[in-house]
Image (cartoon, rainbow, N blue to C red; front, side):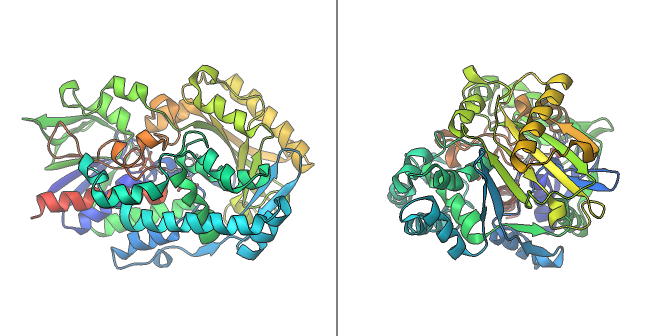
Length: 491
Ligand SMILES: Cc1cc2nc3c(=O)[nH]c(=O)nc-3n(C[C@H](O)[C@H](O)[C@H](O)COP(=O)(O)OP(=O)(O)OC[C@H]3O[C@@H](n4cnc5c(N)ncnc54)[C@H](O)[C@@H]3O)c2cc1C
């Protein structure tokens, strides 16, 4: 059985490894020069940056993935639990640390509001229940038939799932202080959503980052991508980089291979990991597309971002490994991200600074820091060199005020990556950094299908499909697709 995989993000790497292990002859075509997709790497002057993911969350999902190969994550990389897990600055009101020790977090919540500890405990109990339900019953399931979602059991659970209530109103039932609300809500940013458009079910994110903790793979997220790349090659998968797929080939409504600059390549199956919208609109002929242009025009996209990769020849203690700067007008910020009528480069945005050199001595030269500064932006904004530079200046002014020091005199290397780069490097729809937001109508059965509904032998994996955005989710998507293919073609 010959399988072609289009793209080598985490989705493509995982699909290649799983299918090769099941005995398929796998060939992967990747547009860019390295594996990892959004988890690409940028290095300059001794500073090394993970360009995309930086939070290693849900270690149980990584363990499950590697166990399918008789391995553990630690066979490939050392995993450290971070403490503090992360730091949050609240506007100009200073910062707090979320700690590995849950008792410290209870004390912190008591300082936010009356009975804060009890409220956090109750909230986390509910988050844990949803997380267990999600992992055991929902995430690994393929929702191909609408019937699945509505079978009697799920309908019963559905009421408990809180899918019809939004995060904002759910969280307000537990907490009254701005600080407590923000600590439990910032993490839905990982899902590319806002408190007002994300189902309350996703409050399970607080079980993930507060109870389970935040980890760091020594060598960065690139080490994780590299591990799966090696796993795939160990099982015989072949990779071709700098070779974008230009067309998926069909015969009689069946996918039979792809065309690249080196010619036609034939296979029994095609698994697409490249951005779903690009794949359907640019690589598949109109009559064989499951989702046309109108469908994509109506989707709620997760935000894009501007990311500045900055190497400084000084260490700044105001930063922890993960530091969030949440603006006073946090709620208004979501309007500029999700309301197309208000989409604009924000005046005073919230942003995130990742400093892996805090934990990893290989990230930056001694005594130096590797700063990754990410500011979410609405997809589709006009993106010019001048705007980016002016915007970064604004952020650096704000940072100087909040941490009491200006990083500018210490900058040795700087690269900005924004909407146009997401579009150009990853073929991302309107420059989205993450894909489709997790609104109710874009969750589970309502995410784009793992299998083409128009053509045979054409499958899709990656963050646009169920279960969704984030490295652990994408690994699960590939497990679903590989199992589906094995069931249909290996019988
Ligand atoms: C800035 C940023 C920060 C993030 N932070 C986190 C985090 O902290 N933790 C976390 O878990 N997740 C995080 N994420 C999300 C996570 O990175 C993604 O959900 C995940 O990596 C997506 O994987 P994927 O395989 O679906 O897509 P991708 O990684 O985009 O892979 C798709 C691949 O297809 C290739 N491709 C596109 N078109 C073609 C073509 N025509 N032919 C061949 N190849 C093609 C692309 O080059 C790419 O390599 C972050 C993402 C970004 C952008």
